[in-house]
Image (cartoon, rainbow, N blue to C red):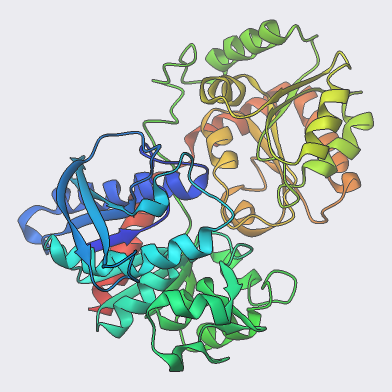
Length: 460
């Protein structure tokens, strides 16, 4: 069986967030599972397809270059496409090169147009290099059009929603010219969405099976609160048995306090105490426990709630925040950083993120919604207890007897959970038990990878 994953980013070659992490870990785990099963199971070939960005962190070997008549013409002739290849860890990575993706960075304001072209190019490019899949697995709206074309070509398809908030919407009169789909595909039951073209909807409508990255999020998106206007369609998919949730895993090598090269390694709460002392010294913090956040500064992540709660939090905690995003939130945190118990580092710095996960006592995730979330799993692997809003994957991954959960997205809810955590911190034996339990939890990709493989086999 040949499975082809399609997504807009894949670690370590391109990454802006959790989607890149998933595409970097899930296919590799599926290839490893196939190797472990040996001759007793069906042979599995795993391929990942992503754009060949101008800023790609890697040097693919070009294996094909030529015109694709299936694309809208450039100038006087068909658009030229190149396909590059990197093979590692049992996975074949194919990068589709279009001129529109040559600029620096991953994402730009014209992405719906760019990924419409990418969506048309993927299947023809796969045919040119002999890599047509048995099952095509598209990830998020950037792969929605690939799923639609694969369905029309008679291929079996899976489409995964990583974040329903981002849907790839475009003026339908303009966008329809670039998709390569037949005219009937632009009605209300297909790609049309309140007068717009919607590439997320393309994946939902045409996929044989739709998944989200946690079971709770799969249920939440069938409600008006979380459905982003697509809840009616998602309810129908649920009733048809075509929508479900599979929780993400965590890269066990990259996030492992026993072997992490960015910290003084440890395997128990005693070793973690050294990491806490090191982080306290790095930022000149006093003896209060450390509450951390490593996050995009965005409405979804609830960082405004954390800022509003700071007057109370600093009475009991040192607060360390690493992240970037909303300029207003950055400015507020920069102002708060004048307080001796608040540290803010703008941007993303992976070695520092590892030190924060290792050194913090507790980890705040006051998300308004969270399809899955990786930070809470990373934190627990490092023995840092999460304080989380009860939503999405946070419900599915943070046990009541390990972390601290609160129901409402408000500064008051976060503060109350942090008070509970602070009181538990004073009961040192109880806190240590929670830390030991957190570090023993299994967040490996083996289980989710196996669930996806079973899903592919059922589709065939």
